[in-house]
Every structure is written in C-alpha cells, then in structure tokens.
Length: 421
Image 1 (cartoon, rainbow, N blue to C red):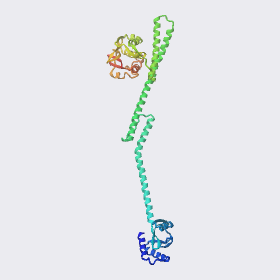
Image 2 (image 1 turned 30 degrees about the horizontal axis):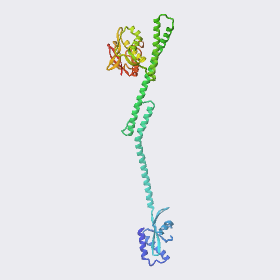
Image 3 (image 1 turned 30 degrees about the vertical axis):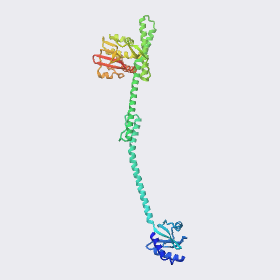
Image 4 (image 1 turned 90 degrees about the horizontal axis):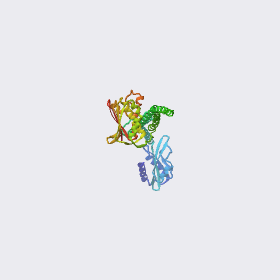
C-alpha cells in the first residue's frame, strides 16, 4: 500500500501541469488505476465527496462511507469486509496535490488471513480443550491422592461407630493426613481403653450384685427373722435371751454393711465415718463374732497390741478384720494358733494377722486381691466363702488410705498386714 501511494504521488507531481479540470481528474484517475493496478493489484480512487473516480474491481463494493469519511479527514484506516466468496481488506488514505485531493484505496484479498485466523482459533480451541483435560486429569490424580486416605479414614470411623473399637486408620506418609490418622488412632485407643474399663467395671459390679445379694442378704433376712421370733418367745434363761439378741444385732449389722458395700461398689457414694478408735475394741468384736468358728476348730488366738489408736470407720474396719481373720481361720488346722495385733511396720502403723496354716504360692499371692478368687478351688462356699472377702477389704482399705501386704509360704502359713499410709 505505501509503495502504491508513493508511486501515485510521484505520478501526480510529474503531471501536475496537465491536471486542471474535473474531466482530467477522472481521465487521469482511470489512467492511474490502469498504470498502478497491474499484477493483480486492486485500486480504487475517490474524490473528497466520496464519489468513485476509478476502480479496477469487478464489483462495486467499497470500504464504506465511514471509512472514506475518516480518510477524507486525513485518517489512514483499515477495513475488513467479508463477502460470500471470501474477505477483502481495504486500506484508505488521503492524497493531496495542489488544489486537488484524492482518496486512494488499495484492496487486498484477505481470505487467507481469515482462514489463518480460523485455523488459529481452532488451534487455540484444541489446545484449550487438551489443556483443560490435562488439568482435570491432573486434578483428579492429585485429589485422589488426598481423598483416598480421607475415604479410608471415614470408613474406619464408620466401622468404629458400629462397635468395632479394634479398627485403626491406615497411616500413609508423614504429611498432614498421616498426622491426622495418627491422632485419630490415638483417640481410638483411648476410647477403646475407656470402653473396656467401663465394661470391666460393669462386670465387677454385676458380679458383686449377683453374688453378694444372694450370699448375704437372703440368709441374713432369715437369721434376723428367726432371731426376732426367738427373742420374743417365752424363754426363761437369760443367757439364751442374750445370745438371741446378739444374733439379731449382728444380723442387722450385716444387713447395714451390705447396703453400705452396695453404695461403695455400685454408686460410689458411701462416705466413711472416721473416728479415733482403740484397735482393741475392733479386734475384740471380731473375735466375739467369730468365736463359734474359733471354738469349733479349737484355735488359740494371741493378741499383741503395740499401737492402740487408728483413724477408722468402725463398721467398715470391723468387716475388714473379720474377713481377714475368717480367711486365717479357714486356712488353719484344728488346734492351730493365730496371732493378731498392731505394730510399726517400716515406719508405718499396721494391723496384722498371722496364721500357721496351709499358706499360698507366689502365683496365688498375685491373684489374691481379685474378686471371687479362691485359693482352694475345691472349697465350698459354705466353708470358704465366695471369694469376695479380700477384694471387698482392699476396696474399703483404699478408702482409708491403707493397703494390704501379704507374705506367705506353702505349708508354713500367711502373714497379712493392713498398712496405714
């Protein structure tokens, strides 16, 4: 375009003396188009009124009034016109010579440009589609890497929520998800421990209710009833009356004790009534309660008191001493000896009971504090109890801030201490 405009300007300059009138303008406009429109160049010439002076286009199409007006105002402009057979590009520019002004428009076939642009659009579209697919696939791969562990964790949560507390999350890697799985497993461990502890406690309480209620409450109800009946009967012997009253009192004491033990094991709300007591009183009451059993086996009891006063709950400590003394009696042979008393043991005050009976092995000593455990499995409940004595004693002593200490040897006897902290 620029070369054509420069050539036309030169032609006008050379022929300036000839160009004088409108007719010559049209004549020379046609000559200019023929001269510079060779080699398939398309040229259009317009006057400043936007009338066509000359054109070598086969059609009457032009850049349009707006484009010609801009050219007349001295603005070089480009117009792309789409036709049925292709696209044409019009470049319009104003040429001024003396008193004459022309608008020259060069026309170029722009079909290839339009085709190229369409191809570029298609290329961009293909690249965009492939790029989008790549991003989607990459996003799916990346998300699956993060979502898969989360789905596994959610599955584990669902399994645990359905009651399988042994299930644990799989730990993959050391990133945030791995740390989350680790924390979840730690939480699951604690939950499982708490649930197992609750189950164990529930089993212990249920066993306590089933056995203690059957073993103590029912027979004591009968004892109290018969004792009250005998007490109210017409008997003349004062000693007989006194003995029956003692049976009734002890039956009521055991009934009260059963209720307090139930509060301790089931409701955990029993409060001790701690007072400073002479341990002689508790030991003498225990010997009096167990005197029929002691006399029946002709056992010699030796009492040695070095420390008199202990801060205890009278009824609860009496139950502990009775339980331990009963075990010593059960383990002793006919005519044996049992020593009971109080002393200092490793700078701490203690109550002790020592028998010279059958004794226990080391493996049995480890289980002696378990509820319902009996050293002699063949011993009946009638003679040996149901195995609650030591376990109940330990629970009561825990409330007293005291502990049981055992020393025993098979065939030589057992020494049990209640050590106060």
